[in-house]
Length: 115
Image (cartoon, rainbow, N blue to C red; front, side):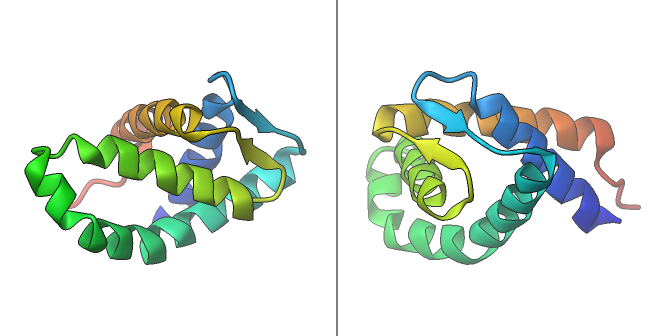
């Protein structure tokens, strides 16, 4: 059940990023859920590797480079996800901020509680 909640949260967060200028989604609801599942896999595989590679910059900037890293990863995800397009790094950074806030809020509302 947790995986399905994660896919739905990613799909909703992806849709919310389309309100950022420079990010567009062309597709239907099924494509959005497929993109949410692919984004979950992308975050599971690519994000830890990218974070490890960017670790020196994260330390030097006291974590502020994480915003740039998230923007780059969202831009790269836009190249892979069906119907999802990110035009430029700044749109990616703003979209990553929106996605982070949306996932945080949705996780707090619908996330599973660990006892």
